[in-house]
Every structure is written in C-alpha cells, then in structure tokens.
Length: 358
Ligand SMILES: [Zn+2]
Image (tube, rainbow, N blue to C red; front, top):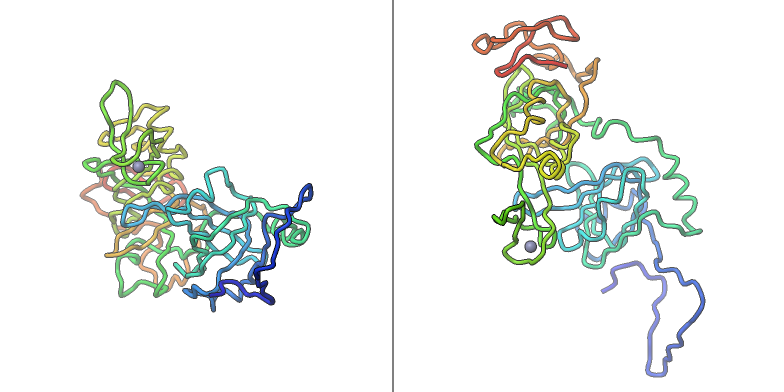
C-alpha cells in the first residue's frame, strides 16, 4: 500500500545489481512538505503520511489521563498557521528538551488529526524529525520561517472568560472550545495530595523512592533510570466570580513558579511530596492569566500561566457576569480577613486565603 504519493515506482528485478557509491554527499532526507490546506483531507487517513515544517513556539511534555506522557511541540508554519506535533511515547526520542523556541523542526511521515481546533502531526512508527534542517532546496521555506514575527505570550488567542462562565455550561461561550484563559489567582493548595510525581526516563511509568540514604528512584521494569520530575498540584483558583478546583500540570506550575520541578526538588531540597514548598505558598493570591484546559468530566487543568495584563480585554462584555479584572462589589465577606486596596482598579477585593495582589 502506497503511503506517499509516487509519480514513478522502481521495480527491482532479478538482474538488479547494487553498486555502492563512495565519497559523495548523499542527502539523508527527501522532504515532501504538505501545504496547510492539504491537512484537512488527511485527518485520520492512514494511507497518506505527511511531512510538515514549522517554527517551534513551545516544546513540552504532557501527561495523558492514562498516565502516559506525550511530547508536544507547538509550531507556526510559514503561512502563520498554528499546528502541533504530538509524539507518542514510543517515538518520544525524536525530540528532546534541547529543541527550543525558534528552532525549525521538520517532521516526516506524520499522521494528521485535529485536537482543540488545531491540526496535530502525530508520530507514526515511520516518523523522523530533523531539527534546523540545512538543505539548499528548502532554503526559501527556512527563510520564511525565520522571518516569522516573534511569538507573543503563549496561547494568547484563547478566549478570556470568568471562572463562573467556565463552570456553567449553559452560559459557556464558544461552544466546543476547551481552552480558555482566566484572570485569576491560586487561592489554596490541596497538600493532602502529592504535589509532584516522578517518572521513569525509559518507560514513562511512575517510579518510587527507595530508602538508601539519598534520593533514589526505582522502576518496576527498568534498571538505572533517570528520574523525570513533574509537578501535579491540586489547587483552588478564584477570580471572585467562582472558586474552582484545578490541577496544575507540570508546565502550568513551572510557568507560575519559574522553577522546574527537578530544580525545586534537587536544588532547593523540597523532597517531601506532601509538604508545601515555600516557593509555591508565595504564589497564593498572586493574580495571573491562567491558561485552562477543560478535560473529561469537567476537570480543569492549568497548562500555562502568564503575567496578568493591566488592561484586560474581555470579549462580548454584554453577556459577561463580572469581569475578572474587576471583582464584584459584594465579595464573600466570610473570608474577609485581609483587606487591601486593589493595585490597579482601586477597588478592594479578597479571597479566602489572602488578598488578591497583582
Ligand atoms: Zn521504567
């Protein structure tokens, strides 16, 4: 079965001979990049594999609901469309953490799907990846990708709504959209649950600490594993419209603290998964733009955190219960232990644990 479009095929018969070619540069890859308009017709079409190239906007690991970890690379293509590479665990080795924002990444033999409104270039067993390819015949493409405008704040196109809107399906705007931004703050952290997990570098399963004097992890299947530390923090966030339960995934907590989970554990000595690190406690009450992803059974995951803007544009304000930028005039008085003027609006606001600060 043909998986790529061939204009000709080569039939190797009995009399064929193979003559090694020596001393010449033979290109390792033959790119046949698809155009963006071609992707729609290739969704879940496993007969056509796709080559695609883009500029890296974000490179991160994403846990799935089944405790697997996927490598995700958000990219902008040469026509400024947003696409994502998704590498399944067996192909995660194709892209490592060394691939950074601004790199040019070409993926070959990907399958196309759509997730959260974005085309996904999913790894197949045939997939290969070239980072910053140098080929004369794609020099124009590379130049166009390098000339793309720099990335503004990640995910800034996601709709900005209040937490109350997020939690009320009847009033939820943007039907079918699962990624939102909310101007809100972390109100409390559920420390009865662990704030981090450790995964095996080889099989991506969870690993467990072993007591031998120092921090050491064992995998039930692999030997000599390198532990991969990932935040997973259950917390309440609030924007004065409605407190909601969320889970900060690794990239969300890393963006909030600006410290990797590995550094917090190994350099700052916060090794107890049920003891709240001071670095995390200090972020309680700080107003941020939380990037939220609505998952199965209405679970909400914080996937990124960016700085709170001074002027917040909320779309269709007419339907809007209360702007997250301006807390309502009658907040929860039961929790009104601390009171301080709001830094931006001059109005006062409060949340259960601490004053809302910017
Ligand atoms: Zn393992």
